[in-house]
Image (cartoon, rainbow, N blue to C red; front, top):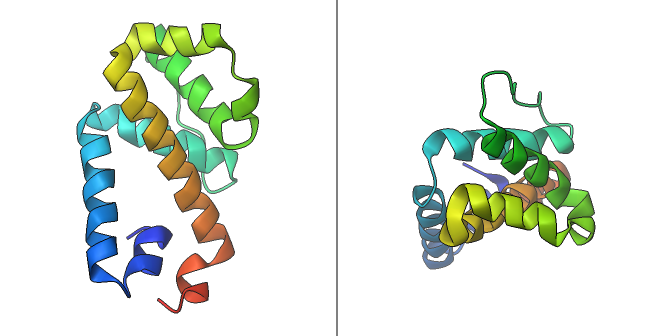
Amino acid sequence: MSAVCAALSADPVLASHYADFRGKTEAALDPALVALVRQAVAAVHGMGAAPGESGLDEGTRTVLAYARRMPFEHTAISDAEAAAVVAHLGEAGFVAFSVLAALADAECRAEQVGLAELAGG
């Protein structure tokens, strides 16, 4: 359970909606890509090793490079970088990926500050 889900546990309806939103976001992408993006974002936060990229296609490496920039450099990502991810994932995939990366970032930050404990969860 993520720290965000744990923090929301006092409100079962809200927790359920968050879990549903997270699940639908992840379902829109390949499960292997979801795991790689979550691992890449966690590594940026110092919460584990970065995913190995040997054997990954260029599009997936582009997605991971973008994901690594989301937590601390999102305002510096260029239109060309975004277009490269759209070219690999399609527009709907890009939206799902953007939400996934944002949620992964938020969940890492929540874990680092002990959000569940702060929320009394």
